[in-house]
Image 1 (cartoon, one colour):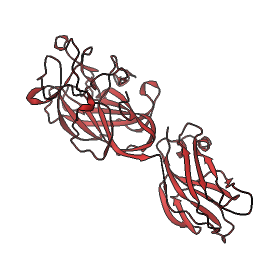
Image 2 (cartoon, rainbow, N blue to C red; image 1 turned 90 degrees about the vertical axis):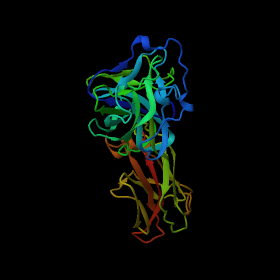
Image 3 (cartoon, rainbow, N blue to C red; image 1 turned 135 degrees about the vertical axis):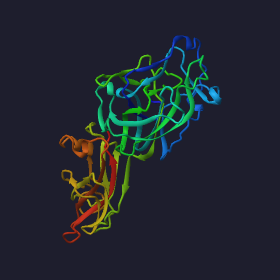
Image 4 (cartoon, one colour; image 1 turned 180 degrees about the vertical axis):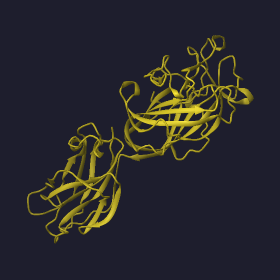
Length: 397
């Protein structure tokens, strides 16, 4: 379930195969558990947060200070019998969703994932985490955007001061919940949309690792699990979600930069945009300009290798080479004589449909830099051109 912002997270764990850590019936509570709402609990975040918190998908603490030695507890709730869900290396995986809000892009730095191995000390025994990011739901035809199932992204681990317990074993210390810091700096910049993170954990003990669920359970919980390497993802029954946090930097949807070239009649071209960039929408992201000389041939430079600021035709080239070009158009505007009413535009989502599969405009997560170029007959060749400032954006799903 999307408890805050929203990408979906899919996690995988080590190879000793059980899909769930089940409590004996006699240990479970028959009446409703008094839940400490996740919003009122400050969950630990030790082990190093590299930047701002972007998402917290819910907590797991149900009791404050009522566990062994004054520790907190995470009690199995009424109607459930599962301490944690298997996400072992080379065996099972669990998944949960999150989304980047409209008009935003995320650059991730790290993730906090919560897991335990039965019988482990509070220093933790997790030593391996691999991660993939998906576009779409794994159980419904989602595709992997980045990452792999072999590279170890483990950074550190620390005790959350909370044990996973039952109603009759509140002082049990055999399931110490560990916060695992996972490197996410390799992930592409993520534009607005829903994603899944596929993670797999390993540890030094034979039991698990296991993923405790969030508390309280909500009707909209939609965590998934893949049982076995050859298995398929499916929604967990009864429903459950998983606690995790994503840290990083939240960016606006587009950014303008660089310096426009003043035209021969004093216009200062300015680039702009409306809508949201998408690899699949087919329309809805218009890159435009204002204050260009009217009725002149023009086009849009674009590329995916970064920003630039180098001398070019008497102005500044703002897009790093290699540079691609859109089809030509005109600046439009008022009838002659020349003035600053030119205002070209192009729908880059529509233009993207003309590109071959796999090109930069149809690859979600690609950062695009672009700049308007046009003719200016008031300057002597080769400087008889007009140049806008530049726009940077990220291609969405």
